[in-house]
Length: 408
Image 1: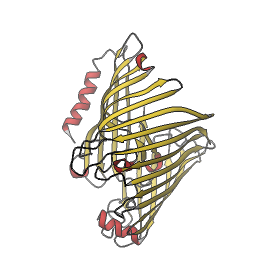
Image 2: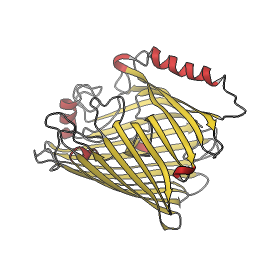
Image 3: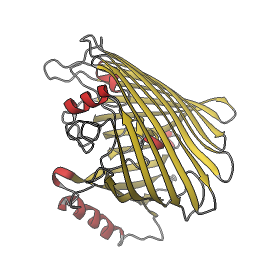
Image 4: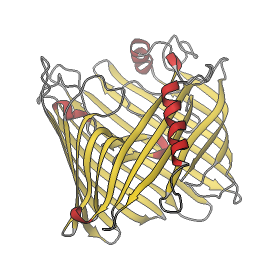
C-alpha cells in the first residue's frame, strides 16, 4: 500500500479529532466492494468486456477489491453564512487473484480527491468556489459504471452560481485524473435550471480544450444537452446527447490531442432506474456512439442492458442482468452478450439503491470471432482473447460471491 497516501488519510483523521466538533461538522462517507470469484474453467475469475466498448455490465463481472474513504470537514463558518471546508478521498484498488497490497502492478492507492471549497457565498448568489483535485459533475449509469459526462479534474471552479432562474458553473482544469500523462488546459461551462415540464430539467454543457504547446497537438471542443426527469416509474430518467471534435471526441473527458477537428464523435445516452412496486425495481440503459476518423479508424458502439430485481422479502432479492455490446470497426463487427443471476441478501431493504448487498452470482457470456481477434491483439490474456482463461472458446462463465456497500 502507498505509504504517503495512507499517512495523509490518517493524518487528516487525526487532525480532525482536534477540531471543535460542536462548532464545525464532519462528514465521513465511503464505498467498498469485495469478493472472490473463479472461472468455471479453473483459475481466477476473468471479467468480460468487449474491445472498443467503453464500459461493461457490472453484476457478477467485477474483478477487483475496491475501497473509497472520504472525509469532509468544515473549517470556518463566516458571519455572511458562507462556509469554508476541505475534503479528501483515498482510493484503494487491487485485482482479484493477487496479494492485496493495493500497490504495484496489480493495484494502487491514491488520493483521488483533495480540495478546499468556500460554499454558500452571498457574492456568488449561494454558489461556491473550489480549488484542488475533485470529483465533479459525475453523471454515470450504475449497472455499467459508465461515467458518460464527467468534469472531475485538478483545477478550480465556480459551482452553481445563480443568475435569474438559472445556475452557472465553470471549471478550469489541467488534468482529468492522476493517470493522465500530459497536462491539457480545459474549460467547462455548465448551465442548469431549464425547467421544461413538471419534474423535468435540462442541463447544457460546453467543454473547450486549448491547443497544447506540443508538436502535432490540436484544440478541441464538445457540447452536451441532458434532460433529467424525476418521479419516473418511481425512479429517475436521464437522456443525453453529446458531440465533440478533435480532442473533444472523448465527450466529457480530455481526449487525444493529436486528433484535429476533422475527427468527430457523437453519443446518445438513455437510462432510467425504476421502483414500480415495493418488490420490483431495476435499471435499464441504451448507449450509442459513432466515431468518425479520416484515417479510416471509424467505430460504432451500441450497448443495451437491463438489471431487473425482484424482492421476495424485505431482505432477500433475486437480481438478474443481461447486457449486450456491439462494436462495428474496420476489422469486423464485434459482439458480446453477458448474463448474470445473483441471489442476494439485502439487510437494509428491497430497493434498487439499498445497500449493503451480499451476492452469490453466476455469470455466463458469449462472444464472436471478431471480438476474440480484437481482444487477442489489444489485450492478450483477457477473457475474450485466445490466450485468456477460456482459450479459443467463444463462451465462458464465472461464479463467485461479492459484497457491495456505501454509506454517507
